[in-house]
Length: 596
Image 1 (cartoon, helix red, strand yellow):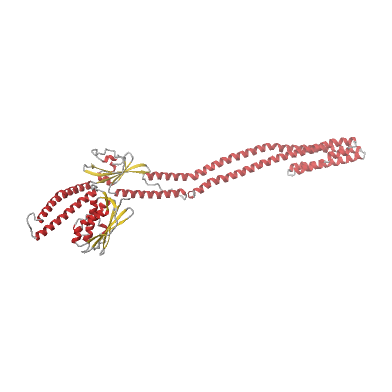
Image 2 (image 1 turned 180 degrees about the vertical axis):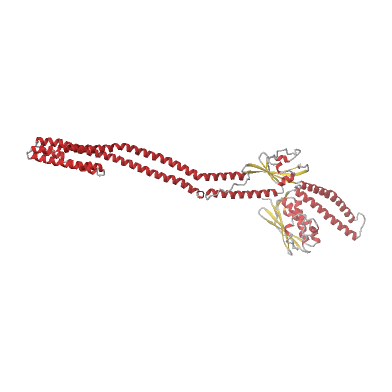
């Protein structure tokens, strides 16, 4: 039951139980103080009794001493003296009897005194009357009767006085006892409340402290990736905290396992290092890349991955930056390895860390090497002989070696046409490589859009005439921009050639120009068969010729439109196309203009 109490209920018990006992203690102390007050009042009461008894005794003695001689001497004022002395005595006796009505022993003594006082008063009344009648002898005889009674009354009063004195003498002892009781209750109550509070605190908190210790241990276990201790149990907030902590631990462990799986599944090498370069986390891809074990890298400088002959010193890496560092190194087994290294600074709960990303580019460099060799071969071993062959065919076709018949002349023309196509293809491949490698430079100048549009239209005029396709400039406006005249002319020449080849004989190709706020939009519209919808999204990708687009690309490598896109992008522009099969296609180019 105790373990199921909420912390609020425990706190309430810790406060309320000592408080209840404090209230009981205060009430008991109040009762004792009230008792002491009663004793004090009783003491005063006894003192009042003594005073009244003394007054009665003094009155009685004074009355006898005063009235007796006056009666014996026969003084004329005896009556007055008698009444002055004797009249208060009955009232004082009655008052004393009323005061001592609860004391049986005192009442017994007063009951013995009362008839004797009545007898004395009766005798004195008779004596007083005899004196008034002039019979002093009778008065003296009456008074002589009081000798024994007087002694008895005085003796009884002394007994009563001694009895009350004995009571009065008990009060200091009783008061001392009361003080001792009050002090005992006071210190006992304080000690009891302290002991009770400590006991309740220990009793209720020992379980809470033990279970909180389990939570602390579990926190350390979770940090050390050790299994947690059993649940603390109970039905209070600590149990809820333990359950929440376990749920959090499960979520963190699941998240950690997921992160580890993701980390280990990433195909590039990853290493998390401290500011000094000590490795904290590595993935399996990095170990596989360098053909080493994870244990060989943990808590060691990241530079130990690389050989000392590398331009990276052992144990030291360049300061993290946004750039990539490419270099050659060796694996643990001595084989060569080319990598690209990237470092990023990240802020973690443990402080600044460096994330090192290492990509194996050995195969890519090998492919680049083969590609460069191929391009070199294409550029020198193919284009140069083709140029010579074209020159020889042109001489043959021109009759430099004598006249040839029509059949050979047609063959020469077709051969020359195919040589041109092959040379154009080689040029496209070389241009695409230059664009991709970033070695392609633009020669820019200020010019009007109509200049390269007209140049492109002029360049395709022979093809348009051969296919009887009309190329129409459908715009009256113009705009000034900065660009490479030769490259932009090539872009629109290729687009116009494709539009002409896609158009039916006798068709129409329109060139439209629209001015926008900070750019121009140039459209080339044909009314041919259109581009198949499944090929429209890929027409600007390399080596994907569109069969329905043009005869040139149908037999080519599919590089003209990707080159157009690359050139437009280099001019900070955009290019795109839309088409409907059986209706035609629209190619558009948007270029920034020179602002006034």
